[in-house]
Length: 199
Image (cartoon, rainbow, N blue to C red; front, top):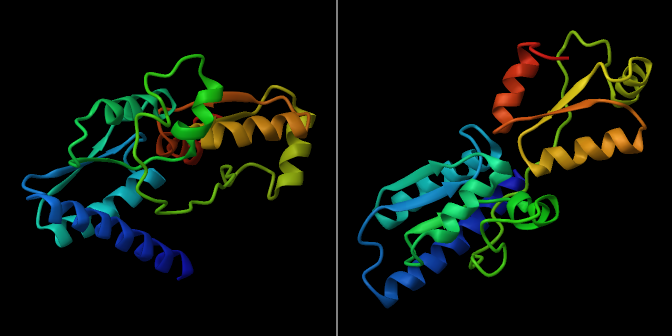
């Protein structure tokens, strides 16, 4: 409930910014676009769709969600950075594109600070470590022990730096050998876990 109230407050702030822009000129006079740098079904996507519905109702204009997944969110971030700065393109992103990627990539197709005008924080999403139900590990210590007993056999997937970095930290801190499997988006990785397509 607290998270929902926080979300509503953040949305109210966003609408206030939009209303301020609207008072300065006839805005919006056409549909808005929200770029999401991750795949459909991801946490970002779900938040963007909630915001899109509220904005469409409040502003009286359609809001289109554009998922531009890939390259750790860099594709979507670059598209948002290149969009016309006319108030019709919003970017719902995470610390992946704005904080982690500058350290993970030698070169980015955007500047995470100069290319964007922040509006506000709109959500907090938790990170979870999940395994398929048939794996004989019911908690983190059991998973670490299992991985140590079979070095190199197990894999972990990620769909963003927000999931890659914790996985890499776990393998390093626990001194376990697991193979990283990168995904275009987190939902794709979850499908493979649930379908037991890899260990």
